[in-house]
Length: 420
Ligand code: ASP
Ligand code: MG
Image (cartoon, rainbow, N blue to C red):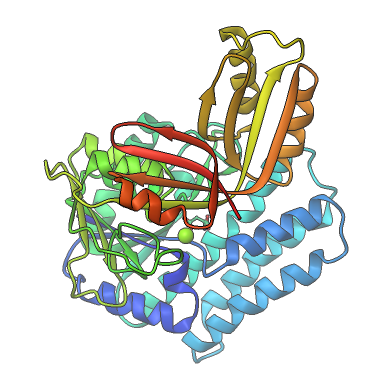
């Protein structure tokens, strides 16, 4: 069997859904499990909805209405008759959100976030599943929350692999014998039947969990780019497609922030030696990139670019040295707040880190650090990582940039820079 994952960009409108079906059509004789993300920018819109509701702003219903309109517009372009059950089905799912919004918000933001933001994947999969069935691609809609079991770390659910793999392996092979499965990326469920999410862009990870549990032949991530590129075309003019990539290089690239694959996706696939294919949903006849246990070394430099970075320098108030004890307090604080460190550097009297800016978490972090340390920070920075770098590539990216922090190893250089 094979696992396919389609991201939000592939199903951002009715044409996207139709294109998805034409890709699936090519593989209709295979056993397929299809993981789908929320449509277009729905996850961002749902995040706005949660913030508005949680902080009692007055645009809550306006945001919800525009999310509804967006989905019903896609539905009306796909289903010509007005009597389709999917219409009631999606309406009922929106009622579930209405019910949540009627009550005072639960006091845990992350909990509220997961119950609401997860609905984006519920909508997209219901629509796609109904459309595939309508055009004769028989499939069963499965609720991922019944299979991907997590703890209750909301917004970053930790998967209980044994339990999840057991549930998946017990039920799904039978289903796959006579139809495809359509299910949601990004979402899971707790033992108390609450919904969790696996972290932004987590749908790739979901695909890996199903593939691992079902011993899939391979996983294909269908994207709007021809494969894994050595740089994001959003930031770089000249990019090259990588034909073959080892699991290790792919893990490193994803870890440093290459958005093409979610960092947690690769390890489970590597453990079972399941190849991961990254292919274009626009040209499904092309090969794309194959990530496998190849010994091939990445032979061209790869660039990863992250904006919106904050560089934080932390020193003891009494000008003493930074010692292990300080570091363990500092790490504990980052961990408690769920803030991931992108780069770090330690000197005798200060410890510097760069992290993604998060309007809610960073002010809390800085306040907390200030009670024990002297804290300086600099925002609006960029983090440039080059894997397999050389001097020429470093010079190229540093044009009009000033380096604030540089961390180098044999294969990788990271630079936190400011535009000048
Ligand atoms: N819809 C989720 C997000 O936008 C998950 C995903 O797309 O992978 O983060
Ligand atoms: Mg996505």
